[in-house]
Length: 250
Ligand code: NAP
Image (cartoon, rainbow, N blue to C red; front, top):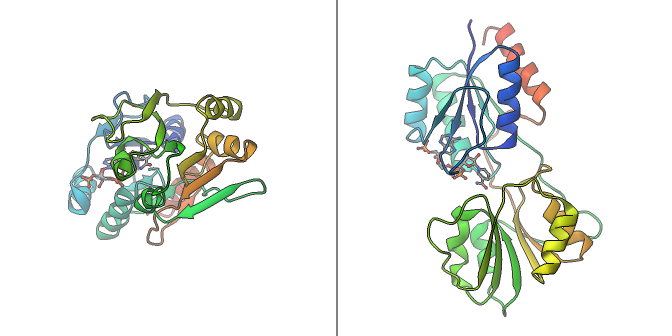
């Protein structure tokens, strides 16, 4: 069987596995949602935009004769991941998730864990504070109900519409970030609270380490839960899974 992989992307993991499969001479396409204005270049062909739910993805898998799906989306891209599980089950196409473990609280951390973005916004019903809000531009609306705070927003692209809270500052950057720089940033803006998704991985961890160094509280948003699936955490493990599946003829 000639493998033809679909990599669901939008993350550093997707870029890393795209490089590895390209280097291994495997045919692959990477799929992006189209949220970022200038996406990182990929070493394999890419397609952009939603598939149209589970049905649309299942149709895409059939039409393009996809043999294996690698879900390398962000741990908070739960709808895409659920759709991938369902569409792969429908079409009997093997699926693996290339992801990263969540962060865990360590000595020196002061975390308050909340179950989702809405719960994070609800728990900000308090007197004004200076907040570093690191949730991405798609989720800013939830915080409109607490316009009393100052929000430091670090985003890849400008928000499509101005945030509905007046007191904010937007920093445009896609990283990588260092603990020293994030610590200096939090001091410069006199940040009192960091709001973060539990994204896991190294790329976004600097702010958590900086908050720890400054003994700042972190409102940590738990990951959405997903149905059971095979999850791997390294490029080589994913390559081994692909080769194993090819060798077994699945
Ligand atoms: P989501 O809520 O799970 O997905 C919403 C819809 O967007 C999906 O149902 C799908 O539309 C489309 N979509 C998502 N990822 C796609 C992909 N890789 N290729 C094609 N269509 C995709 O996802 P999200 O949280 O908005 O994330 C969108 C993208 O940003 C993902 O690629 C993710 O890896 C990346 N990202 C997300 C976060 C985050 O915090 N959420 C952080 C960094 C990067 P259809 O139903 O029409 O197929």
